Length: 323
Ligand SMILES: Nc1ncnc2c1ncn2[C@@H]1O[C@H](COP(=O)(O)OP(=O)(O)O)[C@@H](O)[C@H]1O
Ligand SMILES: [Mg+2]
Image: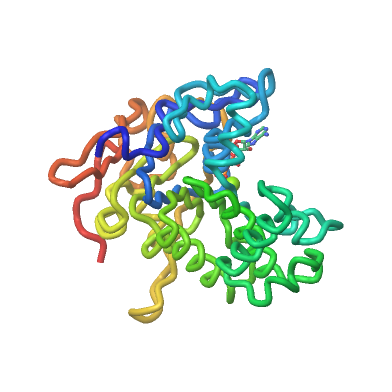
């Protein structure tokens, strides 16, 4: 996997708000046409990481960003305002949790969709209809004249996805795209995103707090805890052989369809809040395997012997398969 196959490379990304560090030097990459999932509990730094990809975080002094972020071969931190605008317009598209917040309430779907497009009125209209159809919306011509509030949450999210597709982005960032929707349509929207990502050959960063969702929707997974990247690898490896006790805990809270009822173990304790007062592993206070070593020395993210690509930040990685 050479550099030319990568659409995203993040190196030692650090983000602090008012001096309080919330992302502590994380590194990962996304290949072209690849879906990478970013997983972790609420507040662990997923959205902050996603926003850094298009330099969408607030500027200094309220927010300090360090490290290197490369998207489509460009150094995002060093882009001129004009090139940054082009990157955001043409290369990266975001789909957020709340579709109602992403759509302007008093403008028609057609207006909002065409506004993002270039070309003659007829060209833009044709492309808008095409994108609405791609997003699985029937009767797209009628939708062009509709206002967002007349649509259900699931339909609104499909419109947001259509808008995201409009300029054929190379990278789609989907930040908890189904969290605000009815349970019954969450799977439909996720399937739609995965189908579009594969069919249109986009790369995707799929952010979720539910590790159970990544099995069928991503190629590789990054697990974050309290601003650290603590496990990384191919989805099938990480789900079958989670090496970090936190990843194992996340899997244990995923309810399963097959196999009858099982006890949901959960992960006791709380995510540490901001800053970095702990010298050792951030997960140590909640980890049943923690020793003095864990409480004093922060484990580095290192390859697991005998496992392709899988990396874990733990002094005592778990070795048995998950059953
Ligand atoms: N604009 C902001 N100002 C101050 N703190 C923020 C801001 N955005 C995020 N944070 C803090 O950064 C941390 C990570 O947030 P976030 O990336 O939104 O978490 P996640 O998406 O994983 O739930 C949290 O502690 C959050 O309170
Ligand atoms: Mg978030």
